[in-house]
Image (cartoon, rainbow, N blue to C red; front, side):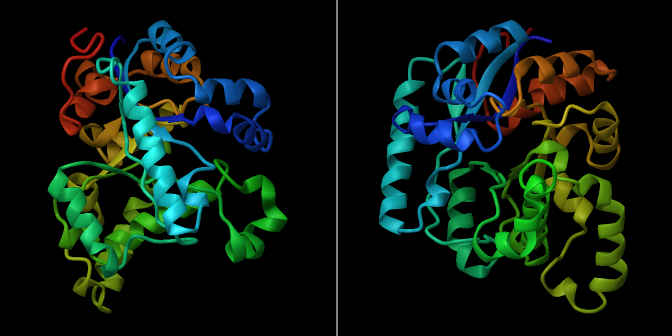
Length: 305
């Protein structure tokens, strides 16, 4: 399928090439290749996009990044540099690329589900922009207590899904979406295990937790939040049975295609999605239709193919 839109696609500042290569050596089989691909925007990336039918990418800054800087002024300065860099780099490629803005938080292990973040969420909804909630590696005491003796589970095998699912359910149960009903949050990797647990979450929220008091901060059902506020992508999770589960539990209207490049490759993502057995209407929605509506995209390569 031509004209696919991908939106969990990473980049890094070229000036951090050595740092990026060192970091990649912790997880990548070929750290040099990873570092070269993640700092490239205009050459190899576009070659992959053209070869595998991706018409448009929405880029995000990678780790190690702003979230690893705990001094607020330094974090803000880096965020500004990142945003200025990517805006300049893709300015003449508006039919191929967009980008999520990077922002500083300035604290360790921060959660965005408390009332002190309401001003931030109000700004997000006022600007009518989307928030991509992406995982990060556990650090500090959390890493020491839970992951130090289980280091091979850090990242995609387990910690990413655990961190994002905890964060998102915190936003649900602490009323973020009730206070900001127009807020749109995107999570990757076919929902970070949450679609599998929707029945159980809904059962305990509605039948047990709400009678005990959860209803004071969680006005709707978990399924309503997924239908109105939450999106999932296929990034880094190219499983047809899992996609079918997500179609049943979440629905085609809330699923977005993505690759997770360069942590994953275009060939695996695109060959899988192009071959997956799915009716044409739902396939078009997931490939690009949902993204076109959500991000209000204009013309891009093969958008109407």
